[in-house]
Length: 452
Length: 175
Picture 1 (cartoon, each protein chain N blue to C red):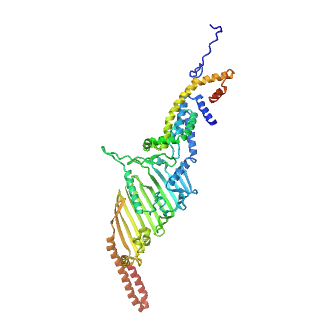
Picture 2 (cartoon, each protein chain N blue to C red):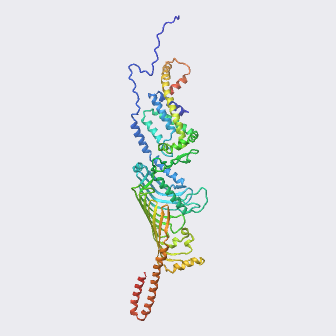
């Protein structure tokens, strides 16, 4: 036994999980933060304030990345601004160049695009209320082995000139596939649903070794489209890929509901007036209804035949004849679904052929036959048909040229001859008496009038 | 080093604060997720990242833990870029499938780099959250009171030995 006196028992340590007697129990925290609304408002305000410093530069950076992927860049002098809340994109003194290359591809003094933000969100499309571009000029002249924007540099090289016909055919084939894919798919019971297209595999440039899969629109699914409700583009000189009389000297494009894909209730109208450097004025009018039917009209009221005969346009076929005169040309087509009907009406006036001396005897004979018509108007109607993506000539109009025009041309020549002969006769009579001379002149004018 | 120590102190402060253990755990969960998941990378805003940010604001979690673990997660995610890409590439099937699911595609799951980081974050975040919940309860119930009592004794001059270590621990725990 111990001799030590008994000490009082030590007080037990308080249990922190048990509240002390008399203490007010701590209020259990709720699941939702009471100040969440205030915090959210502060965060949203900060987000809004950060827009000019974060979101707008990010959108502009994205535009530049897209341009860079096409080998293009905006010069530092170009001013591009994005107003996210105003839903607009504005540009001043825009200059687009190929990366590391001198010479401008396109320039524009002003660009204003008003986005329909709510309509875009609700429809899932990119809808632009109004797009106005002013002072658009530039040069799409061939540079080495490529044409800027139209056919970007081929990494495989080659340097072969662009095959425009093949390019157009490729575009037509693409559009056909594009329309087919967008058709609503109706699967009947027991029928196999359309095949699911796998996502596109890409390699992100900013993250080496990683892979990014991009969704591919599925047949019958929703495809985001670009719709411009009001379009207005005016501009000056635009050089075409090859130097031809068709180089643009000035142009204006006005349109409403401009889109590649139209909804059933939409009507697209696009009119254009183009002044060329050597091929006269060109007028363009496109009307499309609901993406199912439409019309296309192209008219050239005074196209010099020399412009058509230039080598980059028609090769050696016409160039060897050195034709002179003017052509009044109009293309008028209409389509429903894929079925195309149309006509190309040309009236050649003052056609004179002057083949080279070294030209073949056949060319000389053709020139002799044509020149015998003395430049009388020749109407050449060509009928078009087939399909929108594969138009065909259903009637070359050769028969009409041979029958109708030869006859009218012959009539014209006969009238000319008669006018000439009658004039000579009147001259002979008029010489004898000065009083008769005045009447003779009037009679000659009248005959000339008939000749027309 | 000082920054790291301060961060560690911040973490322990969260534990010794009046916040409930589940609040600390939630804060750690959201913080780690926000650190690893993309929120607004150059490719565009990430829906999942923004949703977690929204939840971190609305749910009554410990915001200090969110910020602390967000910083830790971000530093770790930068260090683990290459393993994340390797992990993402090995799960390319998920990335491919995500491309056709708009929410996941816009959360950048179709990008194997971001997918790898997201997967690391999704694995690490619950583990860290559970650990933080347990650690908070353990520290408060087993350690904090003993340390407080010992500090009182030390103030009365009755404790000797390892005073520096003890002082350091008390500094960390803000006692």
